[in-house]
Image (tube, rainbow, N blue to C red; front, top):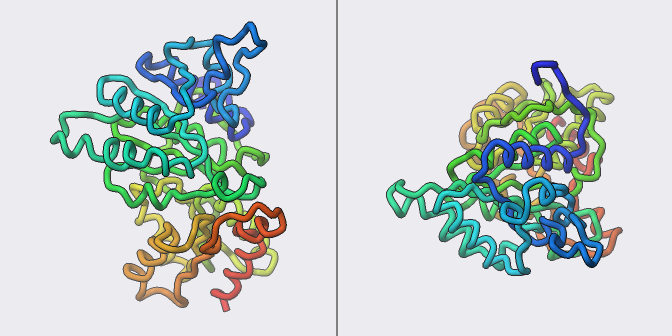
Length: 344
């Protein structure tokens, strides 16, 4: 909270935008790059002044405050502008690069996985890489297979990358600021679904951080642990409310950070409830859900009353059909069903 105790209700997008703006005000080395992040700046004669603010308005109004030297529209070349971000970070700037949809990683994977992730290690710690890459995730919006994935497991698999997934406006602002201030490359995964949700969450006006590598217990419970990631944390909270009506007390663990992973909070909750359901909207093979289920099975086996259960998207591309797409994403009803199967 501020000195005056000022907090407000912000949307997910507004919280991210405020976090970026405050860091750019605090640190002149922070720059922003990406497609349309400046919103067609320089084309006022065509009526385009801060027209977009990125695909989701995350950088709205920044070009007007900080100018084209610090807020740069790029060509449609992810390899080019992600590579430029890596170089800028290695030579003294603190770039925030907007990849847009996470599926675009297929174009610029070499810049992220071979350069950003490894340069600090390969140069013996002599080079810092304070690079933030933000990308948008999730299905349920009719955007078809190439614009509806999550894929955070791909990044989490790579040493040298920190990976965070905010779940509401408060954690969105705190993690955005923490990522920009971090001296290592951080990938921030931003759920498109959360951008359209209403939250009864207070967000401080002043800058603050949520520590990278720290999960939180979003709801206390004693009968079963529901583990959520980003949007699925909200699904888990909804399911916990429904389970409460049926007489079951569900604890919800909000991961927030995938790498580093807060094993202590996960295992502490499971050792209390003795049961776990991990809810993940990414694909099931080699997923974060699988990693957490293995962690629980290996390190909390002696206290479990039932095997940990994974509830994920199917191992199939996201369909364009709205009816089929609705079945692809984990829902409150499916989480309740999975939890009841474990409780029984």
